[in-house]
Image (cartoon, rainbow over all chains, first blue to last red; front, side):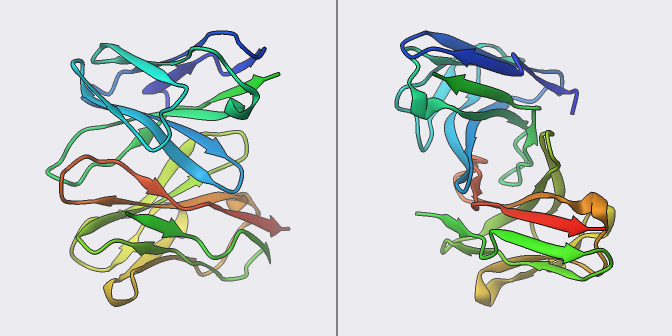
Amino acid sequence: DADVTQTPRNRITKTGKRIMLECSQTKGHDRMYWYRQDPGLGLRLIYYSFDVKDINKGEISDGYSVSRQAQAKFSLSLESAIPNQTALYFCATSEPGQGTDTQYFGPGTRLTVL
Amino acid sequence: AQSVSQHNHHVILSEAASLELGCNYSYGGTVNLFWYVQYPGQHLQLLLKYFSGDPLVKGIKGFEAEFIKSKFSFNLRKPSVQWSDTAEYFCAVNARSGNTGKLIFGQGTTLQVKP
């Protein structure tokens, strides 16, 4: 869905490096999310944000940080990458509907940490 | 804590066969239910969703799902699969209360359709 874009699409890095993954959306949604996907585990929530001043930890936030620079931009950082952070990372957006959010996903970033 | 379980991890079918993928969730309150599909190399796309009303929900590409509240289930069905349905399928749930929108995903089911 071109409304949610992620950069880069693929990244190979080394242990200990700082990495930033970026997400932009043109849907005008207030809510944004970062997930990681691992084989056999589905998607797990890392962080989420309901507006520019709101940041919340998800299920697996250790080793990650985020920044909500604007309504349309939500970045995920790995301060010191480690091999078990090798995964597929997805950004998603949603517009709250009184408890009936539907999330829309970006194309994903495949990160490999050597 | 909420959890979602997909019983079939890998399903192989021939074209025209019928499909049913199981999904059960664990949560005592009101939930919203979703099925997403991920075609090879692509991002997740919404297949269908259930918020309220008719428990039989129809989605895109001929898929449907039935919410059975007493069984905490939301199984995905398609009467006749096509080779192009080869993909990974995810069931997901979020709790209506709190209005956080956070999704809990199942482990995923890989569907392989043989031509």
